[in-house]
Image 1 (cartoon, rainbow, N blue to C red):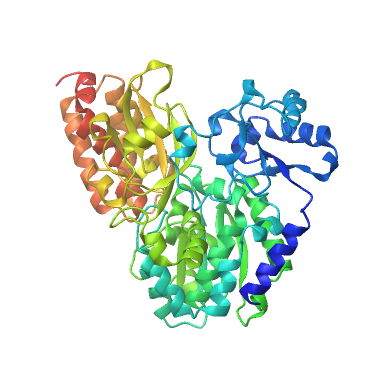
Image 2: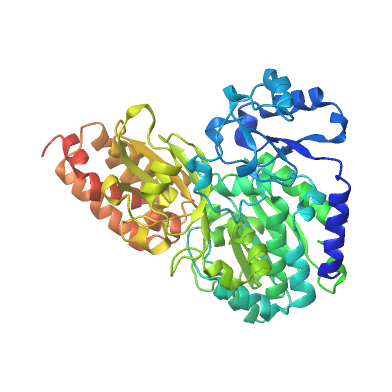
Length: 536
């Protein structure tokens, strides 16, 4: 298959819907479903009937503003969210009014402006199809250019060409480590081995993080396409998506996408009528946070207990079943197709000198606009929280933002103007992580915040190494003692010493980063610890 053939197929799919001029798009991602979007979809579908063929009601992926769900957009068929009339907090009873607005005046009582900063300040690459296409529609994905990058790579590029473009893009792993993607791919490609594997790490376990889940629920074919391109580039023919079982909707849509892509010839043997073959399987995780660490993840796929092992050897050299293995997360793979379509230099032109492209963030906590956003690297925290996020609700004052999940730290107000990229956040004692941002207002005690994250790390420790197994328990005990007003200065000194030991001696990233929330709150909010000390 050549690009011209796929373009003809896409045109054919669009022609099948030539009579449809307007769409009523209902968000059916998990966030809106939890707010009742499925009854809204049913009510709109029933009220629309055949619509005379000119109007269609369909379910789409995440539109971003989760706090306003259920969300419904009315738009011309080929228009994006910015050019649609968006409605918020929709109920089934609103269906007749919304359908009446398709050819009439908007329903002002439900209207959600799309020119507000939450939407206008974003730049979407990973999320470009979210909220527009039906996640379960293979034809819908192809009609907007889906699988064109894969066909381009297979028919017009060598594996070395693909590696050059990914390297030129400057893309760094979006799972939290920020390792250069092109370098990782090149290492696996150069490693000899008859069998190589690709793994998509969708084991998103950070509290308040829902980026990968939303991408899988909204645009699963995009992730599969990126994985297939990666497999072609490194010489692999087998892949696994490791996703936690707590994401049933993401799993269901991924299963549907795999089945339809295979039926259409974009997975399986002789992909797109070439000699390249590629199989994808799903592996369900049982919710162990430590299985987000790549060596523990591989052990789980192999049927072993999900525990990390020392590195080296790294997965690129000896990974799944001892074979060279490439591991990237959902967002990393979702960036690959546009990089191939538009070129690595295009992607490198977005973001900062050392952090290229865009980043998807999940805004949660005490913030007006809870939801999913995608902004260029280098956007300031202040822009994200105060402008895009809409600031703190109920007239409360901002206190801190916790980034990077349990592995990250808390950033106070005086550092809100820092650019969000991999290197800048490290100077503040935190990290970008996979993209979770939990906003904390003046009503929260930072000792309690540190205790919460330490309890999470303590319960999620696999127990393989003593520093993490025992250290997190001891740190949690000290934090609990201090939070209850029973701690002493000696306890505080011991807590700081334990943080250093656990950080320096733990086997994997869980233990090595577990002290970060404690250290960052001590760094910026030490007075709150001192106030709770009983003396001594």
